[in-house]
Image (cartoon, rainbow, N blue to C red):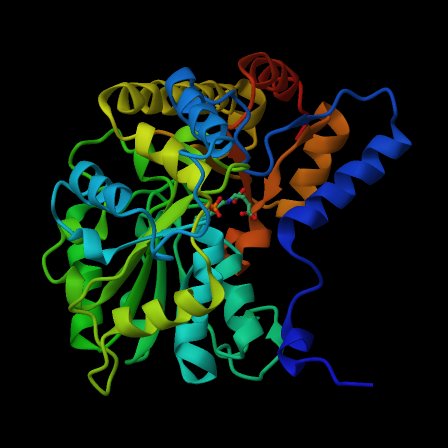
Length: 410
Ligand code: PGU
């Protein structure tokens, strides 16, 4: 038989979220009476908003007519009018339409982007971080060939982001010529990087020939106007950054699937080849463009009515986050010294349970409250002792979950 790609032997057992779902199923099987509520995976729960839903259904109906039918797009990078609208509305002209590449989601683009750099690139990630950055790097062999240890994976450099450093890492640990994954608003900590911090990151990358993969999937949750919603608001970013983004969290397209990446024309590989040229070659080969129906929905989300609906929907989830934060200020949590972070410019609340392990707290909350959360250790070693609470949920479920949390014995 054929040997498997040896990189897969370096992965941790399973992808985090199916692992959590497995534990939830085991608990449900043992306690069939339990009414389990999930504040675990960041999966949107509220219906599509009317204006955007109508755009999807109108486009789908059009596909059933001779005049309205379309097949493959002319360009895998997306409909020209949509690329233009993203550049104009979301970036206020900071990027050119030709730098916008529409995708089927940010997660899919993370996987494709790693292919451009291959196995020989050094990788640095915020610790904790969205597990796809590390798992994806391990799969292409970029993490080196050293297996996982308690301190992390092989050659991947972990940059701890903790309350002690205000969740902004010490960049001096990053080797020159590294790919730096950076997410703001951050999953899982809910922290946002200030303009000064992002400038520090950009200056470091330019000076050390690094490329930043900036994941801005939660930018629509920023309410503090001093926080940049894109890395391209920072001078110098065009020569050192790719931004990935998504319609999943702003407009509930987690199932519809739509995202985009910004690959600046000024970004170059060591031999002078434009990254955009390789990206175009790669996506034209492996990607036939995002769903045309989804693109019609995305387009509608960027007109006045769509922008209003996006704001209302993200406000709804931010209010859930506020309710969760309030619950975590309860007496039982205060007595245990629980510290609360995030949730004001991001849909995640990040809580530290001093002296306790993340999986231990995860099990306590599941067993006593029948609430599913995400253990911080699943996002990296620096996530140990933390729990992530997702604010994606129906309001009544979030309220019920917080009532149960008030009775949690720590
Ligand atoms: N980037 C970040 C930082 C994310 O947290 C997520 C989803 C994505 C990208 C995915 O975006 P798409 O455009 O929908 O592909 N994170 C969720 C869901 C878990 C998962 O496996 O993607 C979470 O709970 O962390």
